[in-house]
Image (cartoon, rainbow, N blue to C red; front, top):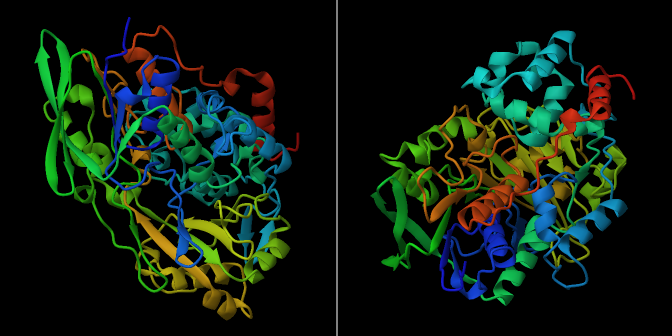
Length: 527
């Protein structure tokens, strides 16, 4: 089939749309100049963002974990050269992680003391519940939460502290999503107390993944329409078929419209985990915004009205109290803090991964990546990132909710948990800590049931599909780069009728060696 005249419109400028454009070009033989990406912000990359400067402070809203079994991610980036074009992004990531292997010596810190390879501390009842969840069909779990499945003691175990902060689970989140994580990452349970198997990019994911992909797309003529918010889609619905006929948008306060032919294709990234994010300062907390402060959720609501096959956006967008948390990025102009943390943890920057403070009322964690973390970052400047899950609770050292704190107070709390006292004033004087409130950051984990997330290509759809964290991919897990890329690959292959499937999800649950090691680890037995 000749698709040389088909126009491709991708709504949203995150990793899903960027990946979809690459798959359209590489596997669908679509000319790059026929592809347009609409993004409401002034920068592409979505949740894989990175910005700032040494003077104003760097900002990372989040950082996504990657690991070796992200088959769609590495298959895509095996076609994408690094910025210097010396090798592919996949080759760079694997080579880097041979050099910088994650092996935490201080996954948990209590009372200013590190805990190396802490025991999980699970009871036999907890282990039996985990095993049951791994086997139980999702339909039987329904809309139940994690706390519906476990007793209260489970949420005080080291296993929970490490699991929930690595992946950002809350007790009230979906038991189905928790189950999927248990199964998907069974091969990582052994070594989880040291974060072994978690991989990092050389720089932040915007510099290491988004920028090379953007360069590759632009070299092929893909159009990036930034500061352009898609507000509605027009549909023609007849004879059991649904076709997108137009795309309405706003740019610079003015409305516009694109006509879409039946031979064109439209892919929409549904929802957004980083929609309506807001930044604070050293002395001011970030504001709590809502779904009306961006376009992603309102677009989904509009097109799903009267179309249940398009999912239930309210399930994910209307529970901010259950999906929000705050991250913070700290730019350090003095080496003192990094030296003290290195002495405490026994890990050099980039080696240890996430450090969690289980005694923290905020359930705060920090990570110090390999430096430099940004391309162009000066040698005498360092960056750390952290977040807190319980943002409405008063801190242990700062008697205010995290949501009411500026960067200075957040760093005061972190220094308190690290038991850094004599040097605290100097650290606070020389750092820039920028907090970020994200009201929807774990909305994809909220309790749900079948139909709340639509299919990649809904029944009857002829020229459009959905991508991202809020559409349904059996077996794989949301809140990952892999999920977004897999959704894009599946959507492109299906819509274009390529007769291909994305690489299969890795199933460690079928490997007896994986299960045996996981069994021993859950029982705190060294393998």
